[in-house]
Amino acid sequence: MTRTAAFALTAAALASTAVAAPEPFLRDLLGNIWNKVEDKLHDVQDKAIDTFGLKACPAPFLLPNSCTNGQSPQIDNLNTCCTNVPGGLVLLTQFWNARPDIGPNNSWTIHGLWPDNCDGTYEQYCDKTREYSNIREILTSKGETKMVEYFDTHWKSNTGDDESLWSHEWDKHGTCMSTLETQCYGRRYQQYDEVVDYFERTYDQYRKLPTYDWLAAEGIVPSLTDTYTLAQLQAAAQKKFGHKIFWGCTNSGELDEAWYYYTVKGPIAGGQFIPVEVVGRETSCSNTDAIKYIPKGVSGGNNGGSVPSGDYSSAFLNAEYEGKQTGCLISKGVWFTSGTCATYRLYPSTEGAELTAGFTMTTSKGPCTVSQGAELSCASGNIASTFAIDSNNYLTYEGSSQFYAKNAAAGQAQEPVYTSSSEASVPFKINIGAPQ
Image (tube, rainbow, N blue to C red; front, top):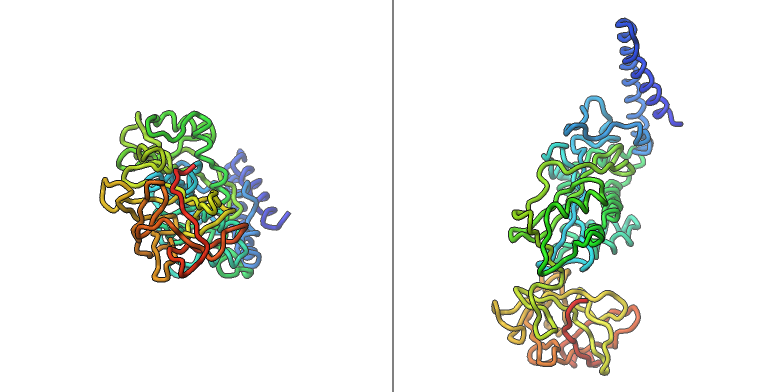
């Protein structure tokens, strides 16, 4: 047992004895001893953290709950490196983005991990010196490549710039978590350790909350026709999470957010997350008796049984080479045979017009354009080019349904796509199909 833990157990025993002592003078005596032990405990713990970092915090069961009766513990009596204050109520928040459709069709995606002051209020952007725009580089440099790959699928921005959302969440919320301040890591601290801990904890908690699966298990699945009640949603949450949560809706009454609430014993990194009831209102949905849960990849009926239509359509761009379907286009606009097809969003050039009249395309990476070198690219900052669809459901550019690559895609190779044979010599076509 560490010295810190031993002091904690001794202090707890003294405090219990002081309360139980029958004589006032004895209670006062033991109370004074308890105060001195508590002061010593804090002094020993502070020195230990300065040397060993967060590993010097007592085990979570020895630490106070970060919220009690809607209030944070008094900071004067705490080591804020071991208990998150004042933001002791922690929310893991998720998105369901169906318009436009973002992320897997059978999974909610990450919004963020937020500290709340136990009462519905919160602080934000608490340390300007630790606001970073290169989160991908930071995590990769720390060996978190698999986690980054997971975020590329499950932590998506509706602007197409996922990393900007990661940075925003860290800058606004992560910097306000007291147990992630740099001094909490002691002399062994290396730059960005606290950033990694924030994203690792977000990753771990999100994976414990499969909202799509939990709802589906109760018969609540995305639908263009069915609606659900708030009572049904909360019953699913209580069955799986143990408590009611917050359900968010768009202005048109479509379900788009889920917020899970926790109190924490111990630091964000390695502490015990304790599920609790939603704080404040349960929903932003205006009609709690008819909440829409719209499928991803569908925004209306369909166009001749091929591509959904509406304000925008969603599609897979399937590659056809030598008369056979061979892979598809992924989110960067390249031809690939071994990965998951990207969902392309097709926006008619004129509102209400058919796709044959022309449309622009975007993916999770951003708008799709054809460069001066005739190369297709989908990326943030692009100015979208105009495409169309022919009578055989093939993608066309400037009237041609023929596209080219320098090599036929195979295995792990990702082949750039060109609209001109002067840049590449392997011809293929791109069939527009409804997402699976």
